[in-house]
Picture 1 (tube, one colour):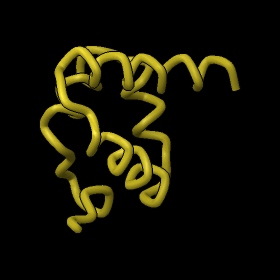
Picture 2 (tube, helix red, strand yellow; picture 1 turned 90 degrees about the vertical axis):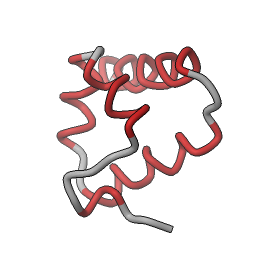
Picture 3 (tube, one colour; picture 1 turned 60 degrees about the vertical axis):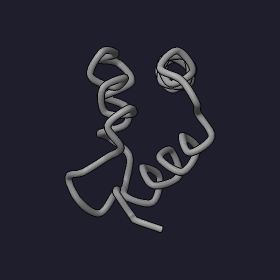
Picture 4 (cartoon, helix red, strand yellow; picture 1 turned 135 degrees about the horizontal axis):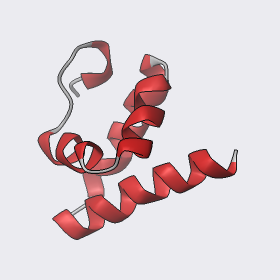
Length: 66
């Protein structure tokens, strides 16, 4: 399994969804590499653009709660 969090490359679908949600992008950027990898691994079961956008929105919502 590729470890995206150690480099500058993340899956394209996640990257595009994060680019459309500044709050989620800022939160993702603040994570350490292990946390980023955990988020990336959660995206492997996502099958559509809409699901990815919902996932990224949930990241932003979780961040605003904590």
